[in-house]
Structure formats: structure tokens, C-alpha cells
Image 1 (spheres, rainbow, N blue to C red):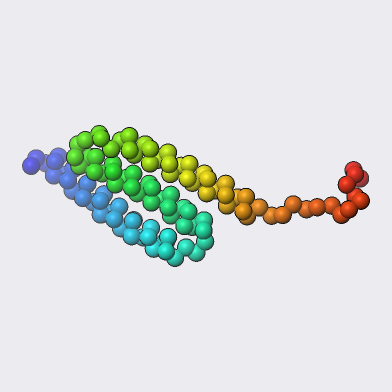
Image 2 (cartoon, helix red, strand yellow):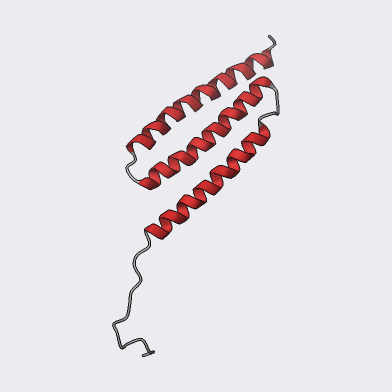
Length: 107
């Protein structure tokens, strides 16, 4: 194995170790919460970690097979995050102030 190949293997191994540690910390965040928004963000980060893991696998195998899969996962993660954000924004919206009866006209 040549010098650049050794450096590539070491960096890929370090990347996989970092991804595994981040995944374990992510599971702790999903488990503990404390809010639904924290869990939603953690699931979005989970999608990003899966994409990063596929990128590391693709780099290790020197194969571009996983790139379309990574694009689809990125799209699904984005749309899921936007959907959850819209749901939480509607759910947490304060109630509208209503005028008392008989005072609907302009003042």
C-alpha cells in the first residue's frame, strides 16, 4: 500500500468512527428529548449521518453507485424537516385575538 492509500484509509476510518460516535449521541438526543422539536431535529441529523455514511462507503469502495441514493435521502430529509417545522409552527401558534360582539366595525 502506498503513502496516499494509507492516508486515505486512515481518514476514512476516522470518518467512520466520528459518524458512529455522532450516531450514538444522536440516539441519546432522540431518547431524552426533551421536546418534540429536539427529536425532529435529531431525526433530520440522522438522515444527514446516513448520507455521510453512504459517502464514506462510496469513497472507500471508489464507487459512485450511492450518489443518487444520497440525493434522494437529502431531498426526503429536507421535505421532512420542512413538514415538521410547518406542523410545529401551526400547532404552537397563539390563538387569534377576537373582538367582543358588537365591535366588529372600524374605530
